[in-house]
Length: 165
Picture (cartoon, rainbow, N blue to C red):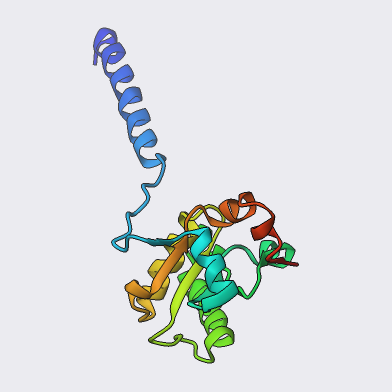
């Protein structure tokens, strides 16, 4: 191979190699869920706590955050390992424990409605929704607190007074 030809081929190989590395190391795409979330407002959930007891409340945040502060009557069901680490078995086990404590059954009650509490009403609640549906809970019985714990805490004293530590 001549020097001129070699000087043309080497830069192309470098560019090709870098392209392959960049594509291979690119950010993993999030898999979109086929389970769109339904929402409950802070007002609806407060009414359930105060009067109707319409919802079983599952707090799906990290256990450390649940222990710091949680909504009165909420049951701990940490799905962090499933949400961040992809360990669905750990997430399911935590949800089963929360359901067992809340309803007396690891699969919950067929007629119960569930309100999921996460940080902002997004990723943790979506993961918990997907896992609950996979466990056999009807998707029309699963609701996410719109805006999550952030919305609850921003609602004022009538909401923050219902936080337990």
